[in-house]
Length: 333
Image (cartoon, rainbow, N blue to C red; front, side, top):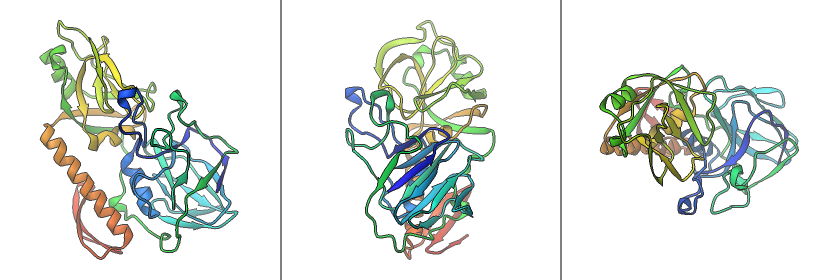
């Protein structure tokens, strides 16, 4: 069991989300940055979809009431009993130890994973908190959480090389999209504006959607409104003011604004980690290209999982614009 001593910002339990309930009006929810969250789970030997803690900008302080192996994912300072520890590495904690997680230097969301995952009541098949529908709630100081059973030996000391760590620094992002499905609601100039101009993430952004500011995207004579239709995370709605809104993990399941594009699944975490003020440029790809990019990302995550397990196999991994071969215990370029 762990006890939360200090919770300075939004802190929730999240897993990979609820699948199969959108027809009932229930959002997917789940990790805002599934890439970092899955790696955090791999670091402690969990399946990638295990429930963990997701924090917004500033991490919590917590006490371990039993031995555990944990990992912190994010560009952040962390201390165990006042002693600095490395993020992106699994650590052993004893009963009574206190973990302090600071403020992210880059990105918006950080993660804390525990060997065995967090035990919680699965509501509609998921532990992910979606407070708007009373499916879980934000955590607060004084809350306690039970951890799942896990053999801890061998899970500590796993280290993710710097080359494999996601980089969310900088104030510019290129986000790839598939155009459509409501292109007839936009002028050719409007679509060109969307693909050629820089948009800025605004403070009016949350787990439901990111509002962007920038040049207005022109609508055709059909206007901004459509007959309400299904809506998915990544959909880029454009209301009458011409400023895009990108739907995120807690997005509603239907919407009545025309959609100019959809952010590809492999890039949605990059947008999720963009702080207000970050500049965003969109680049169009085909559906086939989007699928190939996603397959490549999944191959990389599979390689990272195998590398952290210490399996004696070699994998080609692409990260930071480089390709290298990962072996158990070392990285060979």
